[in-house]
Image (cartoon, helix red, strand yellow):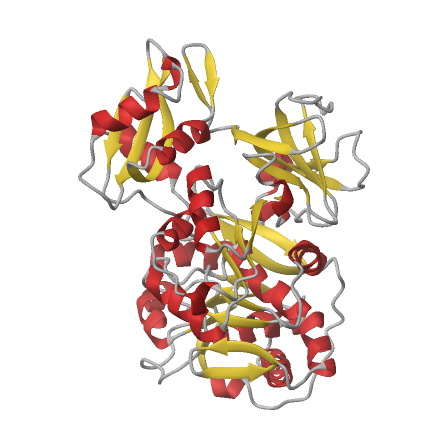
Length: 514
């Protein structure tokens, strides 16, 4: 994972690697910090394979720590900075992290829960330590960690565990997806191949580093020798200003953030340099895509589909967008993607089946959860070319005659009503196309008569006051009767997960408990 960064430092030590507000580091300077961090971690007792949690906002030290952990032979556990102490404690306990990198403010919120847990060493970034160390753990200043020390080669192999990314599931506590060094390195090369990232590019890291697409802004950027700008945005306008300041050429976001950005004014200095914009973390509504193409006329749109368990799976070539509306494209480089039936048989054109991802991007399973790992990580279907395990996504897709894939819905999100199988995304697309809503999420709730009734939760658009009847009339003109929502729930904001995706599970629980 860290080798491309070291290579760039050797070849282009003076080139800009990382920008964090008023701090700029060259590749040579960044690698020196990473190597010193790795040596410091080994000096205070880190052994190969031990987990190190990083609970920080996006900043230079978060990057230094992430790659220093890998270079030391440890396993990175990035923790989303917006999580609450209870959620952080779950991740620390589940991962068995013996080391924690955090800030004084965040340590204060966690202090009571650290005693008796797995954490033995807390490395503090910024400010002074808030009091003495607690029972069972010691406190270290970040300056102590970055002191020059003898470098040690931990003998890392490409199949060794590099990171555990915690992602929310449909039920229960977050699950940790185990990624090897090979997963991360091959993933970076694959994405760079189709996005065309290179040394002249400037990538904005707007998504959380605990999110696979967020962290990949670092791995892909450093592998390409690009500049990476760290950004902790509070308002959509902050993103616009940062793009203008640094001449951002590549911007990757999730649909809820794109919805906010599409409504902003984008002056030429912010949008003119954008070479591409990429979507991940959910399907982009056609109306939103059309708006973004107006905002960024000179940028190529990349629509990507993926899952944390396999990094990325598919992308749609920008040249195919108008010819194949709604498609999620074909497999990315270094991936094999199949559409299979319940017995592992290949589905034919326009036949629905489960998307199964094979190849070197498939993760090593779920940390500390062999049961769930066995359920989702299984031998590749007999028809696969790739060896080894595959990840069975649970997503229902179909392929056309030329192999382009179309997302139908999550296996556990499909709505079954009046004997029909209904994709929630089709209802959501129609709601967005009406221009009457900001966000939209369709769910199926239990109904004695219908099996499930369609419930559409929306937030109002930025325009005139919300008109429920106008929305229903618009939907009635686009959808058959069985797909029309029996209820429209209006919320000022729809719940989102820490990674910015719509939290369908939380919304479902809320609606079921009314």
